[in-house]
Image (cartoon, rainbow, N blue to C red; front, side):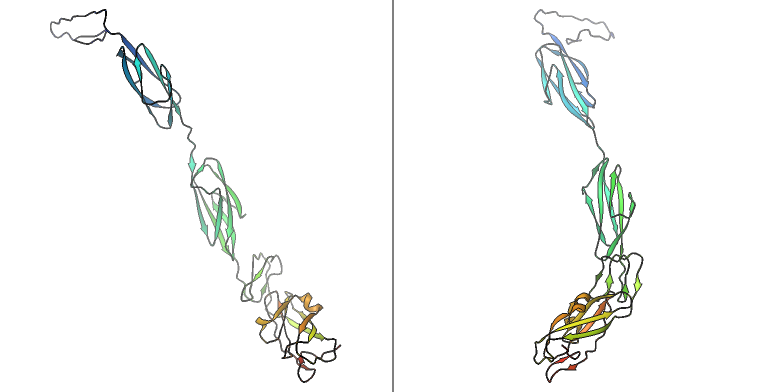
Length: 320
């Protein structure tokens, strides 16, 4: 046998001679004790336990961090965070490696689907959310559509809702198309706001009560006033009063024009037309009048030409 281990053992499988040498100048043997501390996991080289080194030996030491843990430094005869490191064995040494657990907060994902035409505003909008985080969802219907309901992780029909992210969540926002009403339909209850499309059709967030109004309005009276008994020149100014009636929806607009085309006519409110509209007579001497009800129905017009002189014609005889 050889070495400096003391005590030691020998296998007696034959006659043996062992010599122990003692030298007053022999090097000292020191021990290095390795300890692991903390709430986390990890390993150390040399391993946990006691190891012997000759005096003056520089012993390497390293720490390897385990799952969900962090290395928080050396204690005892070593200090600091240097890793790997070393220690000089000039005496008996004890070194402690500290590993602490990392607090892991779970994260979850939010999956969003849209049925129909619309969008959903997400706040905050992120790829993942920490456990317990609250996410606000706002349904935003496209033009001509309305929000119907939430389904999945949340429910209800209000456009604003929230979802708590304590698991992976899936939410569906459903939008339904608003009724596209044709000319002749008018909502008389809970119709605000409503709009006319390019064809004169009414549409909007109608609720329950929609009444049919296929009958156009009628102009019941047209009167023209001027300060003169007759109008003898073009571009003369007159005051025109127009009244109209509708059987169901009511009058929305009154139009006056110089040609039979209502697209080129000028629009007035019923109140304006009833009070009187200052009108400039054109060379044709004819004024055309229409009324439109709230359903978009337009009255027909047959201008009456009252002869004032040989040049200017008006729908009715001009009176003072």
